[in-house]
Amino acid sequence: MYVDLHSDTITVLNQNKGSLARNGLMVSLEKGAALKDWAQTYAIFMPDSLRGAEAVAFYEDNLAFFRRQLEENRSRISQARNLDEIQRAWGRGASAAILAVEGGSVLAGDLSRVERLAEDGVKFLTLTWNGKNEIASGNVTQEGLSGFGRDAVKELEKRGIAVDVSHLNDKGFDDLVHCAKKPFMATHSNLRAVCGHKRNLTDDQFKEIVRRGGIVGINFCKAFLNDDKEKAGFPDLLRHIERMLALGGEDAIAMGSDFDGTTVPEGMGSVENLADVESYLLQAGLGEKQVEKIMGGNACAFLRRMWD
Image (tube, rainbow, N blue to C red; front, side, top):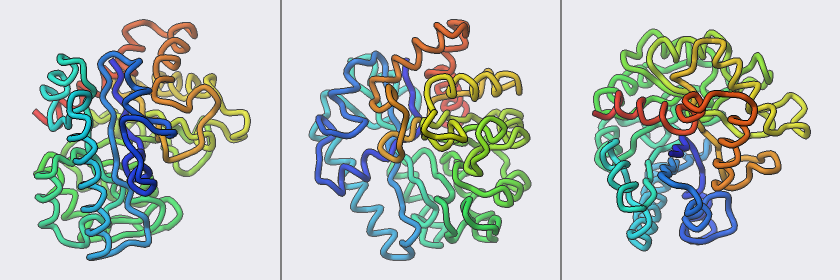
């Protein structure tokens, strides 16, 4: 089983007028056909420059594209709104599509839009990208959650949309800890102790996510794997995973590739390479059960806790 918690494929495909079935990107149904029991998260990426009606229109355009791709390829993929739907897709030999949004500007400062996202089947919301929006500030800014942001977190939890802290700055993370009631996640983040980029989590942040029953997806981005990004590779994935295990995270580690949203090391540039990651971790000495959890088992357990 393979569950990936983040990709930007849908937004990039829509910009390029491509097809999910077959394309030159990192994720396609053709490439994913090599994987048995595959669930891919497709995030609608909201640029920091968009606000208000413009942000809403951008979301709607990408949502419509996502739905067209599902319809055109309905024999090979279906949207999953709960774990049972993931398993039903797998049962018929199809892949499962989890819909997410990267960037809280999608709400346009309107709490009622949370309900709309839930109706659309959005399951994760990354609160920020790198800059500031109505909810909070990203890792290149200094401010934390706004008053609206605190209310938005409550509404997201109420509507069953998991809060994603990837890209959120440290002040925002601290604010979230004081207002979140449900488990939250980092869909595509690594550890700062292994690679010092501020997009990565501190050990204390990771442990807080673990304590709350959350989950962290390992990001394949070169710059988040190794301080010398040109040397990034499979051994760095292992270093992050081993530290996460040492911090008590065996049940919280997942895949969060960031496919089609970043530059990745050689050998990790396609969804089919998830099988190579699995093989590498096994050959590196991790136990079969641990690897099974990391590749998809932990993600499914988290989704069960959040959705059912």
